[in-house]
Length: 539
Image 1 (cartoon, one colour):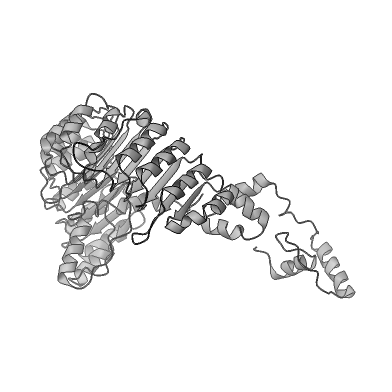
Image 2 (cartoon, rainbow, N blue to C red; image 1 turned 180 degrees about the vertical axis):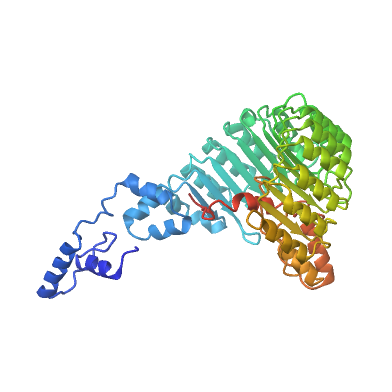
């Protein structure tokens, strides 16, 4: 591994490979053997195989620094490496098809220290059932994290047995599974250390008076994060949310029902929440007023909550003075504007991150934000009809702490680019996209003026000027680090058909899915400087 050809040849002539595996001794003439021995002595080689003598703990430590692919290759070197690699792998992911059950004994005999397990099945395949899950739980009693995807053959009985065997579980994420309230309650009753719960499209939940509510259970005192996505009857989880006294993060995405009532109940019981994400749910200013009792709130996302207005945002800003990150995506139907933003600017002086999508701020609110929020470092203005050169000039002049700026689909021209070139002294990243009044000359001038400080993304703008087609354009969106767990791949390029172009454009603006615009750019900015060699399925 990595040695030169001559050194490898010498190692093979000694009767062992570079990894210490015994090899058959070739027929070598005495004269050649003497020359080989003299060559080894002159060049400092000896016959000791240091790799084979590495202590178990040292070898295991080395493997921890390798990626998944490299670890798999190392496990093929020899039986010792295979054993060490398997016994020190703590995270693994399996294709959870039905035939996995036949391999469970051998797999978990090799990987006997697993603490993080992902079981994912393809939509058209038959998933593992209760028997396989129970067998896995008996061999992984120290499991702390479990992710289930499309395991449609699992039932309440299987989840109940699993929960009894894996009581150390701290994180459960399940999506498109078929078990229901009884299985979820079994987990909450038996896994008292559960800290994070994420549920998406749980198909076993039923309607009607006979439906069993979920929670609170023994895990209520330890739960810190609850995330519910695309649940037709997500309010079955109301008792769990109300009973989770130490809840810190609450995320609700596309869950039907009137959530104002829940927020009114938790307003006096669960007051330690610091992060709230509300996307496409029925909530009004009544709910926001109730949530304003969470005085430690630092992060708030409001995505397509069409009944929320300036009044609700004012209530939040007046009481939640520790707010650091605010994302508002209202499409073109938002009822939040200058009044709400000015209240935020006056009360939330620690604001560091502001994302406005489909919101129409004017110079009046931006001026107050820039003057009062001296720690504002990240700003995104997208799909706004009121953000023009005057507003950009105000930002450039007064946002002295601003480091990252995204302007997309706004009526900005070259004059605004000129103001950016001389303003915002700490600016390190700019994205200007789909601003049709900005010409290539303006962008080139900005690049030449601050090219050493600004990483200017102009590929999409140049495409717009050159052609009416959006084909081939990648969506970078806007999002600051780190937010909704749901980071996904970029939206694929649209075809030349006009209807598909229009649909793709709307998706990128977040008009259809509510997160396209707030899903990529600033996340990439934050993690772009970090290592890209993270292990995807093992550690």
